[in-house]
Amino acid sequence: MLSTLSGAFKVKEIRNKILFTLFVLVIFRLGAYITVPGINAKALQSVASSGLVSILNTFSGGGLTNYSVFAMGVSPYITAQIIIQLLQMDIVPKYVEWGKQGEVGRRKLNQHTKYLTVILAFFQSVGITAGFNQLSSLNLVQHPSISTYATIGIILTGGTMLTTWMGDMITDRGLGNGISMIIFAGIVARIPVGLQHVWQTYFVGVSGSDLWQPILFSIALIIVVLVIVTFTTWVQQAERRIPIQYTRRTAGSPDSSYLPLKVNVAGVIPVIFASSFIATPQTILMAFTQNYSQSTWYQILNNLFNMQTPTGAVFYTALIVMFTFFYAFVQVNPEKLSENLQKQGSYILGVWPGHETQTYVSNLLMRLSVVGSIFLGVISLIPLIAQDIWNLDESVGLGGTSLLIVVGVAIETLRQIRGLMMKREYVGFISGSRPKDLDSQDSGSKGSNQNEPNPQKS
Image (cartoon, rainbow, N blue to C red):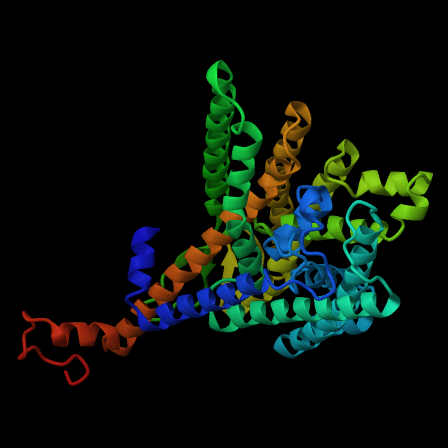
């Protein structure tokens, strides 16, 4: 990994992408400390580790704890993506048609996703502000009124759209998926806060013979983290190679090859989707806390959409499993894959082209998704179970989700860097010329041979 990063910084194009991504992430982190006007910035410190605050802090990098302009993060945008993608499943004919139009259709769907994001962000911002303000011990809003709530809703909605725009800029001009990188930066930025919380909870005030307990807990926690990181990396890198045979052979092309499909096709997107799907109903329920907290329907829904309860943990895991199967077929469309293989004059060994190939790939995706969903569900569920058994802090329970996202995004970003470097090497080889960066390095070296022929001229 270190050698890949050091090599990437030597290439101007990749270096610019990395620096641009870091610049956008720094702007995002600075915005997480700009408090919304009319808000008591320290009001949420007492509930900073509660379920909803922890989830939204995952998507905003601690912005909700400070109640900053980026307090909602990208959670409304992710929820809007889920809704739009579900509506493409033969529910809204126009969306189904746009989904088949390639790049033009994708732009139209993205535009409608942004419109829905504005609506969700505004109602979610107003709902969470009113819900927290109803808690008598917080006094979040200094001068509560309809105009104040509307102003706060507009500011937080603007922050969400700005965060989404920054994510799009990272996707277009930087490295990795922009939205995933925003979430990644938020989680990494909160690691020092988490370590400080562990220190204050388990070490401060402990001395003498009682000190061995927090030390053993810390060692066990480090071992568990290393095991999860290693296992997650291994599964994320694992792939199923499908043998491909070519019917038409061109000069220099192989007779056969393989089609790689990752074992966990959906990556960490199901975990992000499930977390966002849990957070949105919790936000809405906060508006009914004061008047309906003792009602049966409120308690049922509150237990269902709370990952700290057994029912909520099971529902959260079920959502991860469902989104794993759903997003696997979004990532790899069997119908389009079958068409592309036919256009390339290739086929899967032992499988007829056309409908048979589509059926074969669909069945294979189902089997791979079973493995991927079990993997994601177990990694996300183990910390929640450990939290209930050993009465750990709620932020530890959400640590499995955060760890999955961090490892998954880091692997995908590193893979993209390697792809860019490999592409650059191939382009230089095919064109018969060397990259300018290498030419400039050689021309400035003392031991270069001035009589060496130019590959382009020769």
